[in-house]
Image 1: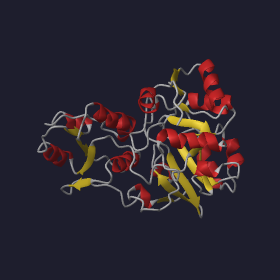
Image 2: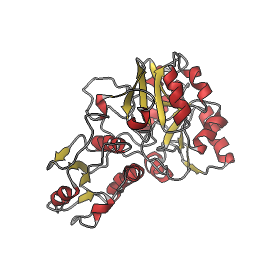
Image 3: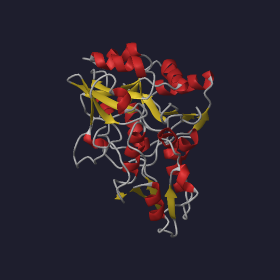
Image 4: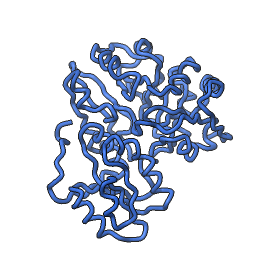
Length: 349
């Protein structure tokens, strides 16, 4: 892999034009979006896309999302687009929604991981949209982190992972959403939720019946192909072992307060932090706060050298399902269930 002196760019038009030229030359750029920072390349250039996998250390059977500038461009990259897809696009795009659709031949197999489908997204972040426009390209952009590490929500996170691996990172500030986009596909007039995100199953159900893919809460089997990024391998994980503790706040506190030890930390709701007797980094009370803080808090545990993290289990309703899904993968599906007081809707959405 080539070594670079990585430039940290601003969101000025001059710097965006510079980044756009890098994209046209087949190079990679760290790009802010409203969800997480992406590692951007020309989606139609197989050699450029291969650099994404090299820079991240990403398995090549993990498909990439293609970012475009406008709803009118969907059929340039996908065919047989159902009416329900346009209804969702009209209501949620630009925004944190990815739709998996039958791909056109112009999308290389390396971009779609050999699948006959492609994930299409119209980002809401003004800098991402400006880069797409300036480059004149559809942009393939998975999260701009080393594979397996927590996703980056600041330019500093990208620099930590990608310094020397790519030529430039655009600093667009902190990502307001904080978790990757909601990913859906369509079958028989229904919406299949492949990956939960900020646009919730409850919101999607206003437009059609929603079916939750089993990979949202279950690990993929060895050799099993999945249609959404981020749903097959262990992801989003700090170096510490993460264990999810499912129970009431009182049960959570009783559990973690009996686990005092070197390198042992709690990752609690804000409302429980004051009662933790082990070192604690809170990650919010509401699902929206937890989504925005999740990855930065997981990275903070790396910075302080945590060995074991006990995470208070989030809700699985609304945006909470996205937080729960990411934590499951960060924990390698390690959950301790205590008591019976925590009620969730995991058998539904």
